[in-house]
Each structure stands twice: as structure tokens, then as C-alpha cells.
Image (tube, rainbow over the protein chains, first blue to last red):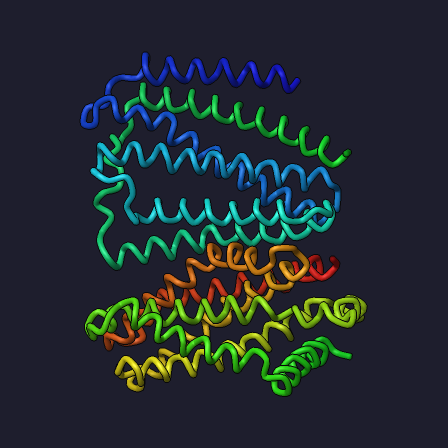
Length: 213
Length: 225
């Protein structure tokens, strides 16, 4: 089952590459650089999915105390941090040629960076507790608080930037989006979600084996 | 015993211990004084630059003091099996959280008042004119800081590398509070009316409500360990 999922994800990524580089047209303003979007946007969507699962797993663990929920939360957080990192790195690489800078304290960039830090802290907490039961409880509390905090971070960062300068630099994406570009994006998103599901099931399996020893 | 009474007992006990030992207050106040010196050395004597950086420095000072002060709030409970005593307390465990939170708020407020006065004296800023709205921002920021700090302190007290883990967990979560309080403080120091920072105050109040609620709901799970 997991293996099939893995092959499916690999196939999806291959289709995503073809769609992103072959099928989708060159973007009018940015040229080929824009194609990094097919990595960037699916990454961030996958990260949000992962953190949503962390919240779900955390609440369910506190309610039921089944270790499976904690394994789900911990595994999803790890993969979520990975994809948030990918988002930030790919965004930086995209930002350099289009905005002329690797990093700017733009609202979205800042809130993504904060998100990254919150969940790195979450993983750090997990790594420092040996007792699986206590680890599950503490991590769940941080997981819930971190997720609930996301909208607060979002608004604070938005207003913080709005007070200083209008967000003129935010991605000059074509809008309305070209159907071919939209389709390529969709294929890549699907591939990333499959990849995420594969990672998740593998990671949960590892977590289960770790607890057995 | 009612819920409020149980919270009050924890609150009273914490304040009594602190009043008798003065363990934290003295060290924290001295720490604040040192922070003022450090900020001055780091930024140089230029008054304009200091004035521009003041709101940020002020809140950075509060947060650093909070990291030290809040992080210790459950340390005393580890001795003499106090933790077991807390766990054996009958009734809703969130009363303990509420009492601890109130105690931490008082401690933080005391430190903040001293820090603000010292800032006014050393950096020659007029903090008197916007004193009332500033106090509101201070109070809202303190509740939010203490709400998450108390919860995380209870957690990290049980964990190794506690001194390191506590700030690493707390700081990212506190980013919205820092942004809101610093922006509001800046506007108020520039003489803008309270209405101009209303959106920040609303955000702070909302964040406080969320943090305290989460703390009340999840504290019993933290106390178990």
C-alpha cells in the first residue's frame, strides 16, 4: 500500500515536471523563472496541510490518548517543517531575480518564517523528551497553540508591514492565471500531496518501530 | 472550596514566597538595569537613534526579563514534592494555572514599571503624557506574554535543557505580541491618540483571550507529568 503510494507520488512528480517545464507556457513577464512556482506553491500548500494534521493529531491525542494520534502529529510536523523550508528556499531563489533580493520582511515571508520557527521549536521539544506519553502530551499542547496562533501571526504581520510600506513587491503573478499554468500547478500540487502522504505513512511507520524498541 | 478560592490560594502562596525570599524580584530588577546599560552601549550615545529604537528596546527588555522570570515560575514546585501536591489538588486544575498566571502578571508588571521609569530617566523620554494608554498596552502585552509563558514554563520545568527550550518555544509564539506592542508603543510615544492604535489593542485583546483560553484548557495535561 505504502509502496504503491510511493510509486504514485514518483509518477505524479514526473508528470509535474513535464507539466511544469513542457506543457505550461513561458510566463510573459518573468520568463522561465516563474516556473519555480510549480515547486513553491505546492510546497506551501503541503506545509499547511501538514500543520493542519498536526493540530488534528494533537487534539485527538489529548482527547483519546491513543499513541497513533501523537505519531501522526509528530510525523506531520516533521514533514511540514521540511516543506516550509522548501517554500522559503524556493521563494528566496524566485525572489532574487524578480524582486532583486533573497529576503524581504514582507508580510507573507515573515509569517512563513515565524511558522517555521514555531514548528522547529515543536520538534525540538519532542526530541528532548524520552517518555513517549509525556512527549505526546507536551507536544500536543504546543501543536495546538502553534496552530491557533497562525491567524494571530497573520494579522499582526500584515498590519505591521502595512504601517511601514504598502506591499508593492508581492509576486507579480499573472491574474487571472493562464489555464495551462493553472493546470500545471494543479498537477504539481497533486504530486506533492501524494508525496506528502507517502512521507507521512513512512514516517509514522518509523515512529511506531522506534517506540517498540 | 470554590474555583476562585483555589486560584487565589496559589496566587497568594506565590506572592508570599516571593515577598519572603525576594529571589526573583531583586535579580530581575538588577538584570533590567544591566539591560539598559547594554542597550546604551550597543546603540551609542546618539539620542535620536535611541529614541527611535526605544519602543523596540523597551519590549525586548520586557521579553528578556520575562524569559528569565516566567521560566522559573514552576521551578520551586519541583522541590519537596510540591508538584505532586499540585497534582493532588481536588477539582479543576486550571485554577492552578489561573493563580500562577496572576502571580506572574504581578511579578512582570512590577519589573516593567521599574524598567519604564528607568527608561524615562536614562533616555530622557516623556513617558508621562501618554502614561494611561501606555499602561493599557503594557497590561495587554503582559497578560499575553505571561499566559503563554506560564503554560510553557510548566511544561519545560519537566524537560532537560529547560533553560534553552523555554525561550526557543516561547519566542516564535510571541512574535505577534511583540509586533503589536512595539507598534502601539511607538505610535503612543509619537503622541498619536489611542484611537490610532485601536486595531493593535484589539489584536492584543484577542490574542490574550486565545492564549488564556488555551492555557486553561490544556494546563491539566501539562500538570500530569
